[in-house]
Amino acid sequence: MRTANVLSYALDPPTDAVDGDRVATNLALVLELLDDAKKYDPDFVCFPEYILQLRYRGDGLSRTEVAEPVPGPATDAVAEKANTLDSYVWLPMIQRTGDRLYNAVVLIGPDGAIVGVAHKAAPTIGEMDEGTAPGEHVGVWDTEFGRVGAAVCWDERYPELGVRFAEERADIVFHPTTAGAYQHFLTWAKYYGYHHVTCDKYVARVITPTGARIAETSSGMGNPKITFSGGATARTSFAALNTDSRTYGSFQNRDAMDSIRDEYGGRVTFHELPEVGNIVIESLEPGLSVADVEAAFDLETMFAYEERTRARVFEETDSSPLLPFE
Image (cartoon, rainbow, N blue to C red; front, top):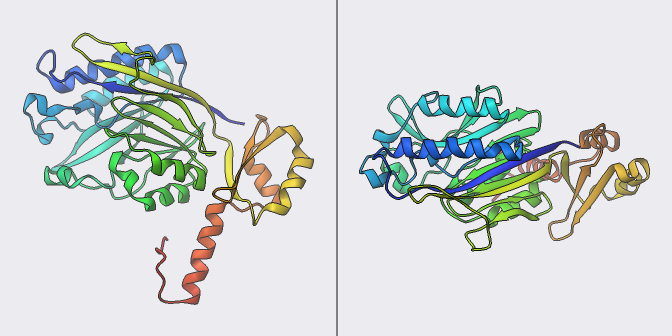
């Protein structure tokens, strides 16, 4: 068992910057919410897509004019808060690297160091017209709470990215966005066995590998919210996730499940997903990992079986509609 406390803020900045500086206004909101986060004792905190420059058109500036380097003033300020909070913080922003722009999410560690930077792999055509370059790889990083990565907004339209996160054995995929679409992630979570954490300006939610939507917030009147001077609002989604779980194909592993139950009893639990032909095994004991169970019973994850099948298909034929992942 391995628990991660995950907090995400659905932060809706004001249309007009109080002091005329969009980046300074949004950064101040982020820093204030990181102070608010202390009451949750989070292991991860996430904000919406390019929150540092969100609604930047209100001040008439271009993406280039509001972009910031990494590291830079904003990441330095957030790093101080992350260190005080002893938490990982995902800071979405428009990043300037030389003469290139990226729609980026910076992962800052509990020690204030930059762990990594994820770039939006599929910027919209509008973004690319305005100078945003596509990311060239899927970033996943090791933490003491499992392997974590980030997809950004429009990335969710491309199922091959779901496969890439599975290839990298992600345990949690964070999804900062400015839109509300999430249906694809219900499928990704259930097929590939990772948790999904999303937040936009109005809604934040968590989807588990069983497909359950938990810690879900919305803009409904019954949902508690934080109201800032200047018109900004924020809502919170908080969940304690057990990231020590993996998804296996029900059919090819069916003979092992009774033996696992006999061996481990209540130390593990099973979640069968007949609609996708999978079963999720979750460890309930700190001293026992699902990786140990997998090794002891020679289990094969559904993703590994699918990739083994894909490889065999390409051995059998030179012409296949399957995508050749390597």
